[in-house]
Image 1: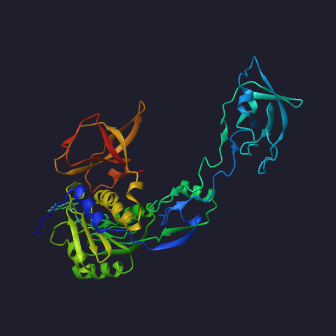
Image 2: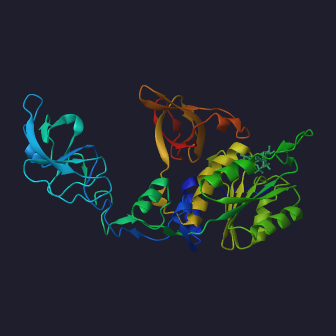
Image 3: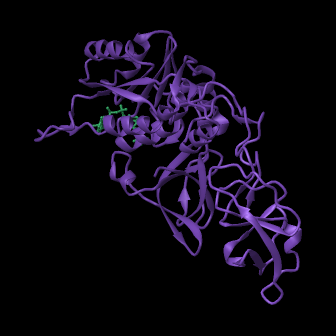
Length: 410
Ligand SMILES: Nc1nc2c(c(=O)[nH]1)N[C@H]1C(S)=C(S)[C@@H](COP(=O)(O)OP(=O)(O)OC[C@H]3O[C@@H](n4cnc5c(N)ncnc54)[C@H](O)[C@@H]3O)O[C@H]1N2
Ligand code: MOO
């Protein structure tokens, strides 16, 4: 029997970063269909946003100094010099002792530096009684306060979330250059695995869970998955199917047969796809130790352990890193862990990283992580969990009440 030469989690991430680089092919996309894409260019603002000083409230544009000392008992008095209409330029200035009505979002007239809200003043026959003083800049968004002309708004490698799309829209950018979207191929292996829509199972059969869980995660990262079906534990059939799928995609994902049993052909199949081949077989993690990572030519290949919870956790940890590197996402832009307190003592072997499924809940203003105990073959351990606690390899466990990093799994 062949034994794994296991790598630590840190070594595995380093090896992934060494082997898996961005594909780097770009395309121009309309802004409306660029959500989730990785931007392939720096975006420098060509104009200020907003392009003019705006009021953030319904009120009167004033010189703040003219309201100083105003109070309920000692109101100030200003002359109402006019009104700014929404969507139009404020053509006349606010002079000393004057006020101009301005709606929320309306342009601040020249001369004014603040806006007093309508509930803090009262207009009577062209005179404005002010019951409160305002500070310079109060209730105003300055020209360029959101985005300044010449500012670097987004750097290459940023994933476009709805907020980035919104900021691009504010600048009138209609098309963006992004890295092209990627396709991954997924193939399940195992004599016992049958399509998930099989209505009646024969004894010994198991429905294919991993295709849907893995494709679901990949979809969250903006990757389309082509399903290659299920192959039996037969080397030649497995090899042919894997090769066929490999030729259609940017990355190949295989599930099952990653261990060292007599019928575990995944390593051999991966090696047959091309050089340099396997660079990790075995990671000192629990669950998911038998994981295989490889490069066949320019394409990454991931051999996931068959147990459904292991497959998902491993894919969430290492598959995500591989696919995002391939997409071209800048690693600095990937928020990852939150902190919560663990409800129980959890032992862990030194030198191994453990990933504990946890239920997250809030109590007395703090987040707590309650371990869900169960084997890695049980998909419901993930159904019950809202996150995964990482016990790094240097630690020999965690103590009740300790703050621990949690990978939120939604
Ligand atoms: N002698 C040893 N045996 C095993 C070791 C070991 O170190 N030495 N490691 C164990 C660990 S840990 C894991 S994890 C599994 C990984 O096994 P494989 O990747 O070879 O996967 P299979 O044997 O094909 O399947 C394992 C298990 O998962 C079920 N499975 C597989 N594919 C699917 C699917 N698509 N949907 C649902 N369920 C699936 C399969 O029926 C098995 O029950 O190896 C241990 N063995
Ligand atoms: O590490 Mo395996 O993934 O426990 O079952």
